[in-house]
Amino acid sequence: MGGLEPFDDDETGTVFRDVILLALAGFVAIVVMILPHLNPPDARQADAMEPPGNVVVEVRWPDGLDTDIDLWVQAPADIPVGYSNKGGAVFNLLRDDLGKRADATGLNYEVSYSRGILPGEYTVNVHLYRNPGRTLPVPVTVVTSVKKSAEESARQILASKVDLTREGQEITAYRFRLDDQGDLVPGSVHNLQRPLRNWKKR
Image (cartoon, rainbow, N blue to C red; front, side, top):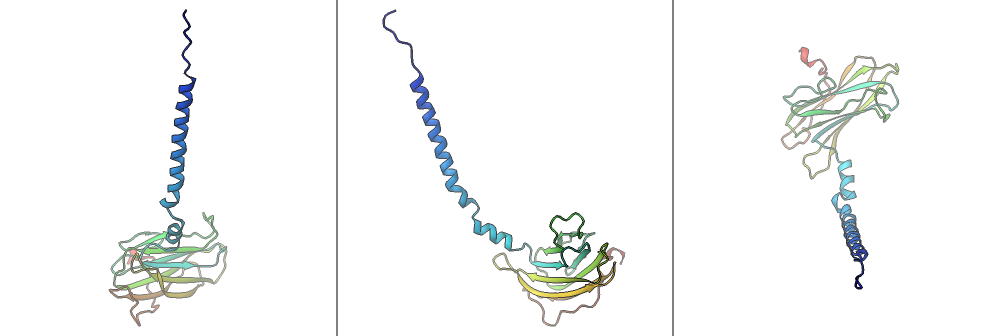
C-alpha cells in the first residue's frame, strides 16, 4: 500500500518521560532547599533548653535508687498539685517518677510548671512514697526557677537539699512569696511545715 510507514510514538514517549523527570528533579531540589529553613537547628536547640511555664519546680534524687519521691507544689489560692492531682488552676505535674518502675531513663526526677506567675505564697514539699530499696536517708535536691516572659530565660531563685528518713514522710522544702513582678519577696523564704498530700481530707 503506497509507501506509508507505521506511526512511531517512541519520540513522543521519550519527550514525555524527560519532562516528567525534569519536573520531579525540580521538585526534589526545591524541597531540599526549603527543608533547612522550616525548623532551623538553633531554634530546635533553644526550644529544648528553655523549659515551658513560668514558675518551674524540680526535684532530683540519686539516679539508680529504686525510690519513689513525690513533688507537691501549691500556688497562691490554688489546690496542691502532686501525683494524685496532677493539675490545678496554676500548676501541672509534668513528670511523675516512680523510681525504677516503668522508667527507661534511669533518671530520678520530677518537675512541675506553672501557667503564669501569681503574686503570693508558694509551697514546695517532697514526699517519700515508696522505698523498696530500703536506702535511707534519701537526699533530695529541690530547685525553683522563674521565667517572667517568653523572651527571658528561666532564672533560678531557690535551691535546697533535704533528707527523707522514712517511708511516708512529707517535708516542706520551702515556702516563699513572689510579688506582682514575679520577683522573690525578701525575707519571705522559710520551711515551716505545711502538709499538702492529704489536702482533700482537710
